[in-house]
Image 1 (cartoon, one colour):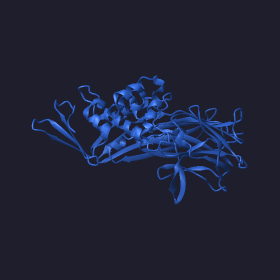
Image 2 (cartoon, one colour; image 1 turned 30 degrees about the vertical axis):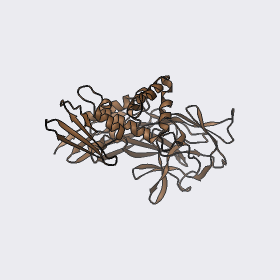
Image 3 (cartoon, rainbow, N blue to C red; image 1 turned 90 degrees about the vertical axis):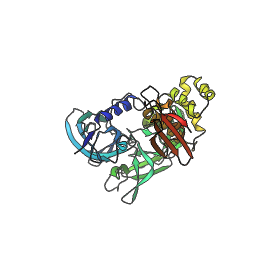
Image 4 (tube, one colour; image 1 turned 60 degrees about the vertical axis):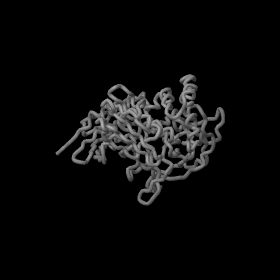
Length: 428
């Protein structure tokens, strides 16, 4: 039986990913995203530990045509004196259709582990094990503080899109370390209140010291609250009140698309919020661009990479500013090409720099030419992935690579004249 191990490749990719510092640079390495939500019940508390693992952070083995990844998550609950309370184990086998899928950081497996505990103030101690590599990682312990005298539970971040499970509509948990993903899709904020008699709630949303919203929370309902796993997603689910304590669920909609990556804080009050008003902070986290291209990690480099679509004068003018201004200048530049300029997220900007990343990874040569400086890199950044790639030899025995773009009606021919992998554009 033919079996290939991708351990070394995966470890190298993980090192690159988590030393780049584009997410949570101050935290130790974790192969997964996770969230913990504690829901009071009549007989104690239900604790939900949800997790989200990118395929790229697992080691897959190939047996025949099947790529298989196996992992285990153990979560142990201890009290404040480190006395054992309970534990749960979730073990899964994942399959991928090809090697590219095993290396994809935008394909996830999501799971849910739940506990019932009779008291509060305790610790969750999760341990992740990649079975194929026998790699065990003790994740950061999670402290669960007392909920006594708390009017609001932890704010829940959900997708604005509905998911159908058993013919009923639900909303999926964002599940990114309790942070708001910087993505195109709308996200919503659920603020659960134990006080069901609360009639009005006002919210102040602050993103990177800018006020995004200050006004009333217009939508609310009374329901039970729990989480379920369905169709590969973790869903926030209201429950029948005979099975759960009631909560007043206040929902903030249509605000996430205005948010930029960075610090996000939400304050609430029963009265309109003015300067000096008494408020309660219900969320203090981050808007995180989890799939941010590496080429955007340094804005100076990102500006220079505009060279294939912009003139030197524009680039030099941007670079003549202080480097603290580079992020804003870059976003302002791409805003004029944004198909939805009313939102902070710009899909065209993302696509361009994903192409830059791809070019750097795939077209660098043994002669030292960077992928972004190569002819193939230039064409890929400008036009994207070709419809068809053909490799042949010319009359001199040199390798010829032909890229065809059917919709654009363009064709580019590259020749590796020296046999070093540096393909030079012959025509296009």
